[in-house]
Amino acid sequence: MAPGLYVAATVGCEGLGGGGTVDFDGKNFSPHYQACLTQALSQNARYRQTCIEGQGANYPTTAQIQRDPSKTMKDVTIAVLSRNTFSMNGVRYDYCGAR
Image 1 (tube, rainbow, N blue to C red):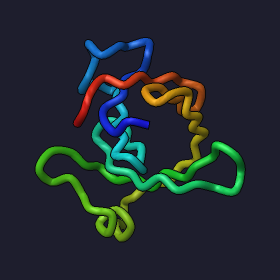
Image 2: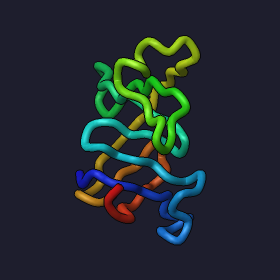
Image 3: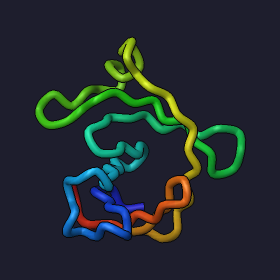
Image 4: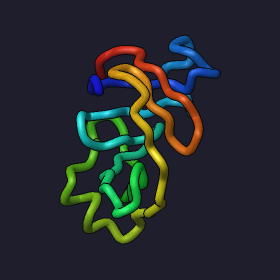
């Protein structure tokens, strides 16, 4: 998949920067205002996201995410539909450009 910003298909690229945005860095999927590590689970298409708040100049590193006591963890289903489209928990996201 192409690294960059993805937006929920129901929102469209006009909503870039809003709550329906996911940043894909080539390995990790980070929803709006979060920095996440995305790790594959044993079940097909299931992943665990470990996230903390993150944005702008203070965007956290992997080490900061792992040691942050306020991190959240959630399991999600991610299916790559094409080089520019994926679904997360049944919501389709389309590519809207580079970060």
